Length: 455
Image 1 (tube, rainbow, N blue to C red):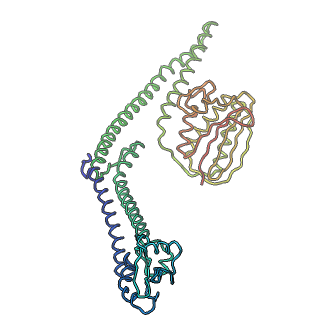
Image 2 (image 1 turned 135 degrees about the horizontal axis):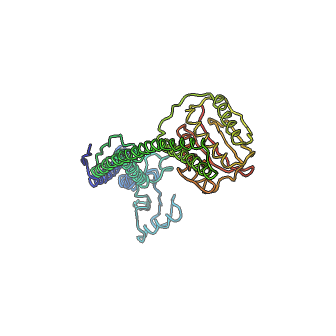
Image 3 (image 1 turned 120 degrees about the horizontal axis):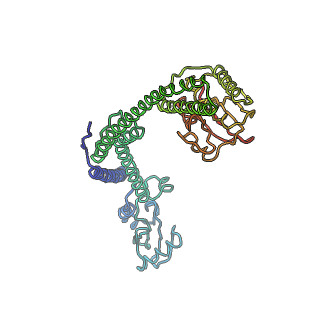
């Protein structure tokens, strides 16, 4: 099913995002200004000219009172009461402010937003009042402990704008991430070669174009895999048929060779007959190996049954004893385990284990020791085979489980032409386990370990 490239373009989405950011900033600024207006309205804070307005309102009263009453001055002001000849009669100003007030009285000073002056004339002299043209809190505690109103509201404005931008960006990122999900899912499934899935849709045009390409890729890959599978299946069937067909003339040659052996032969004829028997036996082994390789590529499923570890270990010991006896090897055992359970296909696992034993036997001299170690580790059962052969090379450790790999000191069975450890690893992986190759640390030799999950 083809994905239709509908939805919005990325350009339009980006424009909407920028519009959302702008709208968020306008709302943040409007909110702060609204709070500021409400604070003025309910007189939680006083405007910058509030003190100046009070002074103008009380100007006449301050100027005409019989005696100078400092209580008539608004809070947050300081004063300088001068006599008619300019002498200081009373003040609560600090030295620096007092100097500036005197300069203002003489006409050489000036006012600014940080410190303004107003001079009130009285019959007994004059009063110079200093005040700030800045907003102020109504509450004295707030006036003492909080930042200046302008700084506070500017900080709040920046904070709200930042929160607005972060929130809007997070919302849009989540929305775009949701639109990316079909792409991520499709690429993940194709990467796993799981092609039996429906490709989703997106509300973004450019993403839908990519999904269309992924749909074509999926169909192409599906066709390619199906073609390859059919070719491989055809090859396997041809190999199986050819192997079977070769067996018939080989059996005839072997039968006739046996008949010849029952007749009177010359010494040369005996040698030639020996060659025939030896090479027919070799061809037979080649055919068995060819069929074995063909079968190893067809292992898809296991018949897993729950087995007690005790019974499993008994079977492993039995196989190892039979093997070492036939290879004339000394068997050493180091076995201790917890009798839990594991899921096992006994036939396939035996096949894998015998491959590992064969690899060890092929690289062990007669009467050498072969050690079987079995132990429980957390939720795993570890089975190790340790031999006294030459050990693994660095190349072997890296490639030994590759199919058909045969290094100079490869741990593959000579009978299996580089597929022994490959097949063993595949079967162990299908059991949910791991195959570990390493060299012994106590002496020269190789160590092959199987880790199987237990419950």
